[in-house]
Length: 338
Image (cartoon, rainbow, N blue to C red):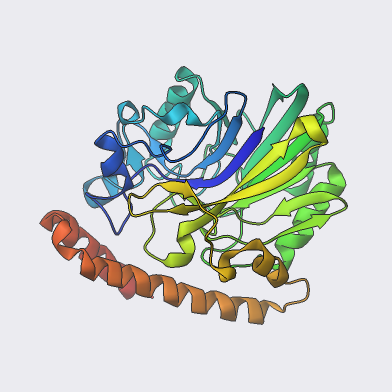
């Protein structure tokens, strides 16, 4: 069975520096301990952090979204990681290259770098091809080392290079954060990729679940949500895993997971109606105007930031003083830029 998940961040984030996901993993916690893995499974996930021993950043920013490789004893739960997203260059090109070397040395595949825009493997007797890229601008590098903002013709060329595969996947970092629906251009682009020969489109980056649709008999999942990625806001705690059974007609099912108080995902059947695909599929906006979409996005962003502020206040005594001062200083800089 192919099992495909969304965003994975093995590190402490902005609002839990010193006591978050990365700190738990450094204390030997298993981020995948709540999940079952069958012997013949092949897992794919989006690695949205940096696994490296050094950073080109200092202070607070040198601690976030980075974890030393020796702390990641459970990295091989996944067989293939996407490495094309807006955080992998956060600690510089040298750290990114170190991460790719570490993954390769650990016997784990990666896809989405400039030298590996697609990856081909065999599973359940089928040849599977996957391409990965980001449609989000990179704020950390003017020349990212992953496949970023490709032209349509370049995407089409990569899809055509997979024409000999039995099953083709597009794994795309796109959309806007914290909103429960894609925008019209995404939908059109996803349909175009299917028309070019893609069998399954999987999206990530919004950090929340979005709906899926079936277009020309092919599934398009617009966002799978966070998988291992702690955020205080409740909608970011629910995610999905796609299951693809290649041995039985490429049958596609899904499981829900919820990120618990231990920062790690576990299977769940108890998902609020607002975060279930039955609801989210009805929110895919085939005719929304951009103004309507961005008005909804603004409301979601306000709710997300409010949850972060409350989390910061409730956990203020868990921070080191130096980290707390760094967070306050960074917050003031952002406010002054507005």
